Length: 364
Image 1: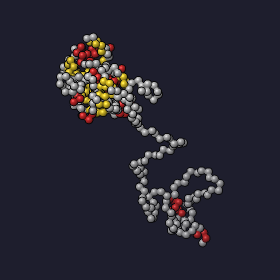
Image 2: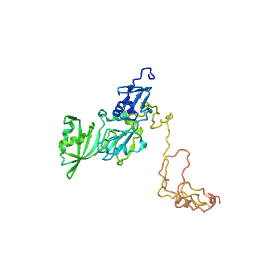
Image 3: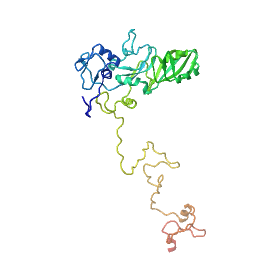
Image 4: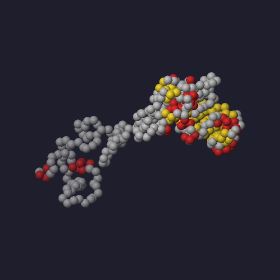
């Protein structure tokens, strides 16, 4: 079998393929093979050291292996008192028994022990779970821990260099003291390894018993306000941003590329005129002026604006008109041929009679 380039297909180990299909973990797949439940190309497998390709016919319990589904991830708020396992030899309740059946078969990313609570990631992709569990990802796990005893914060400083307990080396652990309340104290713990019961063993080594342990975050995924016992799927957009999933072909299944935003339209050439924003409120009227009337009054001046046309009628005396004129403006040079302004009436001039055209008294 070869790919599009003509080179032979590399293939994957059978246990990895079964885990990627979401049927089981790699360890369970090895047990299934030992029990004689898996066959490839009509041959019953007796060892997991078998490499298969996309053209291999794989049967589990006589049924063909389904096409792998797109990788999915969920945030789950694990309550205390549940075992992080699909089955428990002691008959204790498991968290997988409490999940909705329509969720299908999922596996956990790491574990939380029986008395621990908080954020637990679940996925349908065994290969993705293994990838997220590796310390090489560098993802920080944060916990809120309640310990019994009077805490001395300076004792936690040495944990930043790591510690060896009963021959087991634990990496860097950062502890921040929050508060002391009676005989108990709350601290925040950050680590990247997350070995089995690591926090409990380290604090017991320091002489503090852990009475409550809550995981707050796992890498970029936060517990937030997710209610206890609830499960919520991580959006595909977040998976693509954080893990690079869903960009093209994933897990051997073709799918469309996720598009977050539409491509912006090409900008028009030349200068673009940006219209002014629409004003939702009419501008206030200017102070000292009444609002504009809907209709111009029939007589007299309008509310404001240009003066109305002067109606035909008897002309007012020039003296009266001149008295209403504003004060003369400051003298300024005028162009030649310009019409000079009429001087105001002087005392001693004969009063003109009202009415009639100008100069009518002279013609008499």
